[in-house]
Length: 176
Image (cartoon, rainbow, N blue to C red; front, side, top):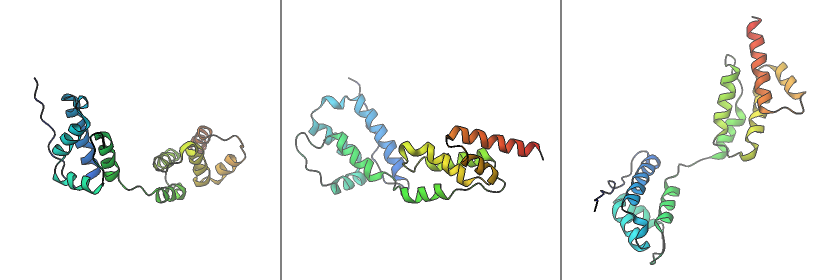
């Protein structure tokens, strides 16, 4: 029978979220290698908690989970750790940054659009993402003639706004 070494114990670092993801990945590989899912839940939990290390074991104790023969499962425990180590995300602040974005004086149109798209990623806009990026472009471009053109198009889409912006910038550059 093959012998597989468990991952080294988890230790708190300056970047706990990244360290946790790495440790969890290694543990899940180990879990597959030893076919942990074939063992009773209580034994699965014991193997996880034995290998997790003192730092994480102390955190586990703060979860206040009631242990039985079938609960919590290692999936539930790993989810608790995922939530514990998930970086704090202030959506209001991220949206503030997104809605405050305007094109800078010497910034190309494409750089402006890229910056807006990157800021939109963590704003949790859902289905509104594309229309809000379009609106931020309309409101944030320096070229007020372009803004006027945008506002005259009731069917303006994000792709159309980007195409018009590129065309306006290209014609400005060629006329200089």
